[in-house]
Image (tube, rainbow, N blue to C red; front, side, top):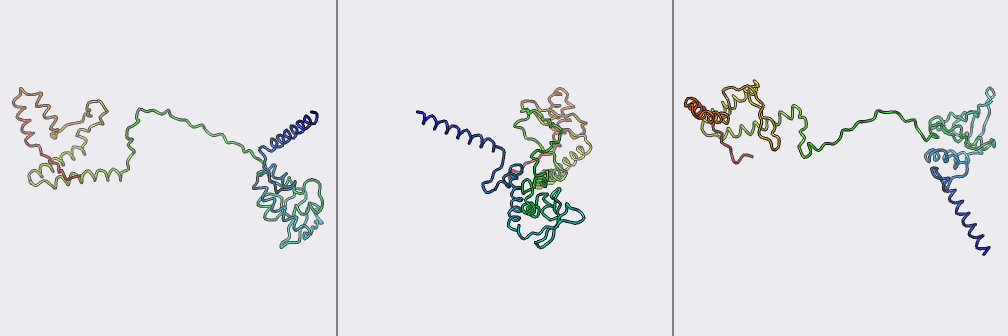
Length: 276
């Protein structure tokens, strides 16, 4: 019984330690191929930065014996590195080098790592102080922006076709299409007199429209009777209005004769059934 209790307690303790280990790794990057030096770099940077530093770290360990370091006589913090195609200079107080990698990436380069490894410097071989703040700060200062406003959706116009604003070119093309249909209808009229009357009627309507003296029909709402916007009238009143005047003036013979004369002179428009 005692052996079983010890086994259960040991198993419970092992599970607890594994849970604490996994809990401590939440929010941190890990890499099974990194040693302790690179694991520390990955802990407070990103995998991209750690990958760049790992390349310099591996190259520094391979070329450790080929590098020679000479300290400057005038400034004791300046060291000259030889052993490659070019000579470089870095400082041992901020661990900044003048090589392309250190200047562009603002990360510890192979020369600094090789020197610290060769000199057995205190602390980690990869100097954390030479890692720029932009690679270690996970948070950015948020800018305050003006909050947007929204309009409540209204289904009042739901199902209706929304007419977009047309450009001048679009309006001209649409008007040209309509006038071409009218021209096709006029060209099918065989009688010359009827053609002249129809053409004169269209010209008169064009003059009224140009002078803003014709009626303009307003869109009819569903379930509502037709409405018209009142405008100045001239001699080219519609036949429907003349019929209304005829019905309202049945007792006046003179007005009836005038209406009949106007109706007799009105052009007759025939539609071509073949037209689309």
